[in-house]
Length: 320
Image (cartoon, rainbow, N blue to C red; front, top):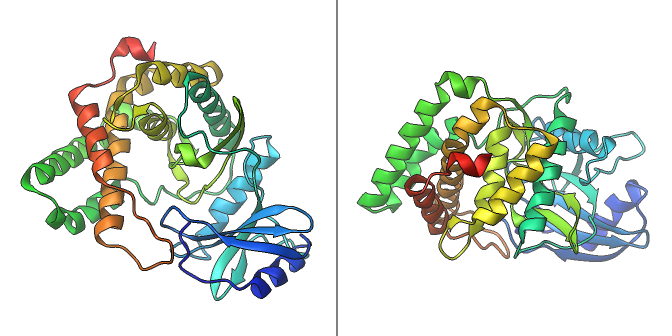
């Protein structure tokens, strides 16, 4: 969502015309995020988002793009990739793989209340069920194997207490991943990055999920935990916000009740979600790539969230 690859208005206009989306009237780079190049592209027919993929390959991208098409076809409010006259939804701009999707209505709710969290929980469960029969498969590329591989790259940038926490938590997550309870967790395509800025609302009405480019096949519980670690957290302290968490869990379980293994492992998977984003933010912060408008996220936020999840695990009655 930073701009790594510059796109000219002429290039964008040519692409929009080839997709039968009209003539370009405005092209504006999107600030925020650190993975892909994103532009708002407005034409005389509507508003769209143009994405150039900086890390994902042509071979990997069909999983994400066709997942969005699959979900959109089942009534989940997600961006729908535009096809050219040959039916292709994966394009190329400046030698980079690219896609164009419709711009969702509404705006991000950055100060959510319980009603917003309930709506996110409800739609997340609907998304999981809608994706259960999706035929393509790709692992979560920022899952446990990546955490293990990336540990040595981020440890030199931490003090001894941080190093100890990172090592101990990673050992704990490897232990969980080998358990029979973990093996029993339901799984399928997950968003894996459903933060406040990746959901749109109009008032209290949820109008869409977007930015599926961290998606993969993983446990649905991990996806829920990632959500809770953003939507149901007090941002200044990193501590659990109980009312919002209850609302999200209720909204989710009304559509898809949690299984016994999920209820058992939710506290551990909340720790896993915090660990994943602490490691990735350390990596992005200390080993950044050059880009226009690049603003790496502060990694210490998810260190605080992880410490909160370790010191104050979610109680069983909060899951009921």
